[in-house]
Image (spheres, each protein chain N blue to C red):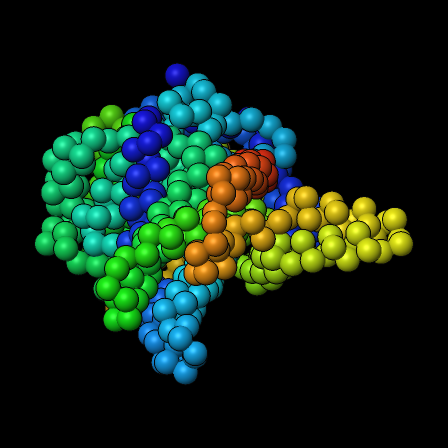
Amino acid sequence: MNVIDVEGLSKDYRQHFWTPLRRVLHNVTFVVREAEIFGFLGPNGSGKSTTIKILLEIIFPTEGRAKLFGKDVGDSDAKRHIGFLPENPYFYDYLTSTQFLEFHGSLQGMSRDQIHSRIPKILEQVGMRGTEHMRLRNFSKGMLQRIGLAQAILHDPKLVILDEPMTGLDPVGRKEVRDLMLQLREQGKTVFFSTHILSDVEMVCDRVAILNKGHLLSCGKVDELIAADIRYVDLVWGGHSPKLLDYLRTLDTKLSVSAESIYLKVFPHAKESGKDFERRMNEIVQKGIELGGAIQTISPKKETLEDVFVKQVGHMESRV
Amino acid sequence: MNRFKFYIAFARNAFREARHNKVLHIAAGFAAALILFSLFMGEVSMYQNEKVVKDVGLAAISLLGVFVAIYLGVTSLYQELEKRTIYSIVSKPIRREDVLIGKYLGMAWILGVAVVMMTLYLYLVTSFIEAKIDFALLPAIALIYVELLVIAAVAVLFSSFSTPFMSGFFTLGFFLVGRVSHILRDFGERSKNDVFKFFANLVQKVIDLEPFDLRVHAVHKLPIYMEDFWYPLFYGCVLTALLIAGSLVVFRRRDFK
């Protein structure tokens, strides 16, 4: 069973009652499976938060439907298994960490005993141990983000939805959140998070969806989205054999020569298949060695998620 | 989930919030100062010392209550939306209706505590001029509380779709019209214009806050009949229920942007 099932979701907004309707989400369809980390990727204003709000019934869709655990969004049973961290969370700043978690735990239907047995464990998990009696008004942005995470996982949900969870965190904090996501996945939980920080997605996500201007551009496994094909190969030769240099100059490549090394950047030809490119590379390497060259490094450069993202979003911009 | 448990959680949270609200502290301080000042006003009256203190005291409780009811009614829901705390609340296994009812019950609790505290304070002040507790004030105070519940419900209704300023403006308008609607009806009775007569009568039937004011009865020891108390109590409950039901209709399908 899919944990999240979104089909043909569209949303129209009206800024004021006298302004015309504007479509901010266009026929978005995707699924999120059990025990995976799903990254919802897109630039600011792409519709990520709008989709999340629909999933949590904070807003209602204009068209389409969304299901959580096979039930329509808004279903109390489904909501019981969800933990949610909103973007830029603001919480009641007059509460202490404990009071804040007590409040959210009771809204989840947890008993007082359950809440109090979970609080120390959860605070430890988000690195907030020792803040039990501190008021939230004294927290930094990063601490607020962590306490927000704590309320999201307090009731041990099966699905954790995080809207821009890395916002306001320093590199250490970001790593800790990534580790927490991985930890949740290990426990069999599903993590759905939105972000525009590509490196985070590449590091932890099983699958991603790319959204721009309310359109879903692509959805799939990270390594499927990133083309398996090599963009180019960096080849560094040690030593200066004149024959090698003459040979390399005959090739259709980028060449630069320094005192000790020869740098070669080999691009695949247009319409050249991956296998043909691989064969051509083998020939270059073999021939170079025969001509007295010694290879220092070979590094094939593949497409990154950033390349995919920029390409897709850029393509979309040009269409719009 | 046990809804009652949720309401308690919400009411407790609302109360904690109110405890840290400086605006409410200042308002309570002002009302307390007004009651204290009535001691001096009583001094300059002719043998009416204790009546002046009680009259001003009840007026101060009512004024403070109306201010708190409007202030909480228009700001508390709006702040949940503006600061987006509503997002993490709505994502919980709770019906939207329960959020609004929980917020309203929280307000009712705060208003109740404010009225009880001001009443105790009024009794403390009156103890300087008379050595007994005047229980005749209690029905008047109880109806002040019911009136405050109605006003809070009006504020919640307006704030479910409007800004705090507009909601406050409309709610204050409701309160003022409600307090003078019986005068409007009297004007209508004397008017030869049938449309005005109908309109004035209608307004008085729908918005009538005058029956909640038993101040004169309580202060001057006039008899308070059963219907003087039960009618406004019943009217207040029905009106509050209708207003909250109206808010729920708006709140249930509203997008929290």
